[in-house]
Image (tube, rainbow, N blue to C red; front, side, top):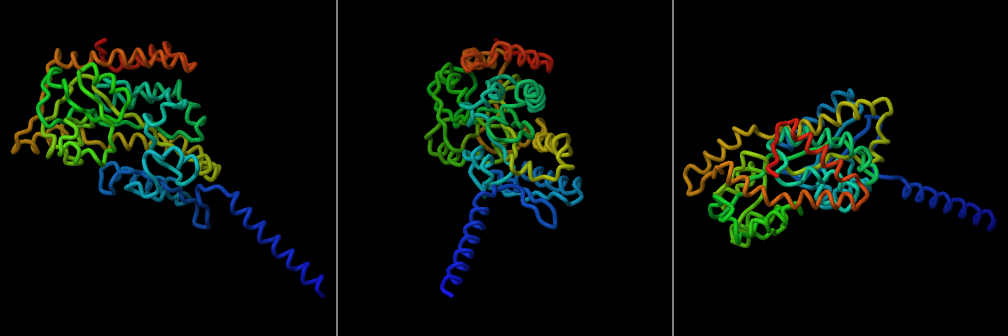
Length: 358
């Protein structure tokens, strides 16, 4: 009798360990149920931001196009993870879809994508999106896969501008200023201007410029009203020629992609993945609307939109040439065809009518 009880005890414990082990081996990712597959998408914007609206609309299109077989749960305000942890979180299956910033991954093979972060390359958001899409078609097919990510689409920002506490009307006005910028490439540019680059979390910028810890912000023009920067940095220096557009990409975890129904994978790859990047771009206000909104906000303040002459813009842009040269050298050192990549990048810009002043 004792042997029988011992036998059943051993069997029971073995089953418990097997079940536990199975649970530990199972990867996070798209969840399947009788109601279909559910994906999680995490972003860092507030739920009422216009880009957040576009993401929710994309989620609705996914459900519609798959006839309810795939649903996307959208989480805003970084509810599932911070922006800086996006690569690790998505690759590890903490959530299924997100946007990674290229500047945070330049020490990986995603360095190839960072050519789009070179300063004064693009004259508008459409040029940035289209040129980088074509460039990545040739050079970016495998770089995300190598980092355990499924590439969905490139994404980009509205044109950047200088938002400052005091007027910056020419390059001499920039001397001695402390300017915030997230992109590493801007450090050398600011040095050429006689300025200093300070990198801070976006959430800290309003208070920092309000207190005078920094003098100016290098951020997208709509940030003047998106985040009320016009209240503390009421002078906005506008670049009509090439300026800067932030580069990023929407990606999915491999486990989530594998969890999609096989017959729906082509729909995602051919249509729904590119659509997310396109909707992200199209969600930005048109240029005329952005600047008219800023003009209205500044009408009753001491601030103003500062329009540079072509000659003044060229002086600011000259500081970028060493950065472009350094990118080619670094690409070659990393084993990439840096000169060829730069030649192709410049040709794509020329086809879009962009004139690089160096």
